[in-house]
Length: 265
Image (cartoon, rainbow, N blue to C red; front, side, top):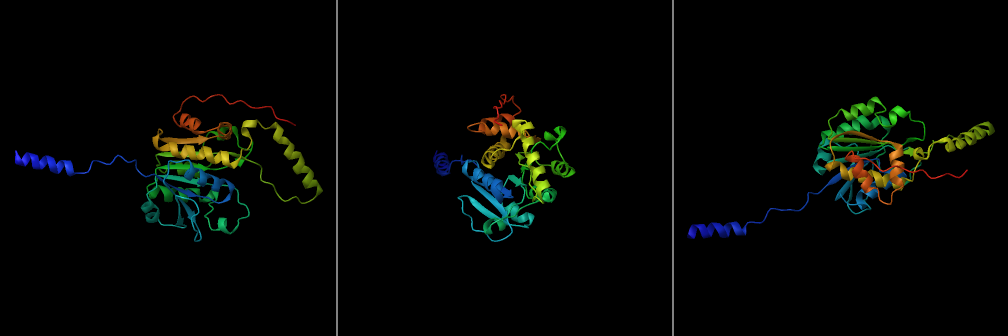
């Protein structure tokens, strides 16, 4: 009897198993620029990730709660020790960078295979690549498929999830070399009225909101490689909250129809 009571008291003193959710972490390469900064803010601000690390090429003091930095280039052990399961790569067009943005790692499209391999080797399971393209220039066959051998190589690495997100961006302007060049640029700018509305660029904040919801939902989604076309990004931008659309798309459910508004000339 005494022994049984002693055992019962000892069991009562043992702490109950923890029911706290596991801490989720993400790493972002390409947090510079308007789009990269917006993606970082959305990942931190919409919940789902307790910490988000960004890759940097110079020392940088974190300014957002939950934000930390990883020096680039970094070895696999450094990233592995951070414990992230989700990786986000933002490949946006370069722009003039201020001092703070200059400290951030800005990957180029040709860096994607090596960057993805580094993340995979460090234990990251879910990868989201945000790769804007010039509006209406992507062939129809590639809007919902892999566009390059580099993307195919990334998909073959063995991630649990790989998502390529292709938001439309405005065509990149070249410096006008004279009157004829300016006239040509003006004529080309009018072609935007011939582009379907769902293929037009949307604000960086809306792209980032949808990207963050996709990143949050990957852990619970069926595995595989997916491509988010520009028209789906546009549809998400029309929602007051893109969370429901992101969940439905990741689950393979039917999506509500997207309605285009009439445009003014």
